[in-house]
Length: 166
Image (cartoon, rainbow, N blue to C red):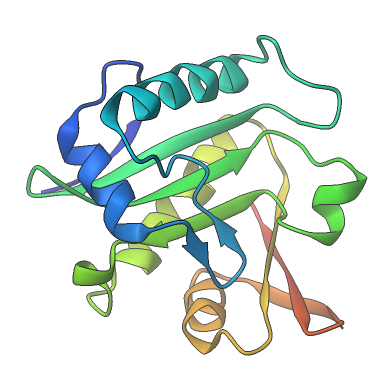
């Protein structure tokens, strides 16, 4: 069974362990939930929940919702969906970022996660989503193109893909 779950302030050690396994981030994805201790992770959950609701949002940030991808009751990855873009996100990051835990890579979960995040974009009335990735990140490019991403620009080693939401 595959399901997408929205971050809650009560998420537990299963998600914490996945976040730890993902590490601090790679290939342009920053794992802002990475924490040395569970108590710090819980504080970050609260901050990210508030961010999704637009509470205490710093001027340079936009509302962003985090979703966990669960497969057979186990978290295998997560994605960030930004509700709209500012000038910075138009150049770095886009609407969606995602990561799959290393032990579960190569199983097609990134394709599923991105598909579900695109569906969530539609719920937020976003007409087009921007995804950026390093030109050298062949795996991410495949995932984005599989989900209808159209390469519209390349700049300084970054690819800029747009997906139209139907």
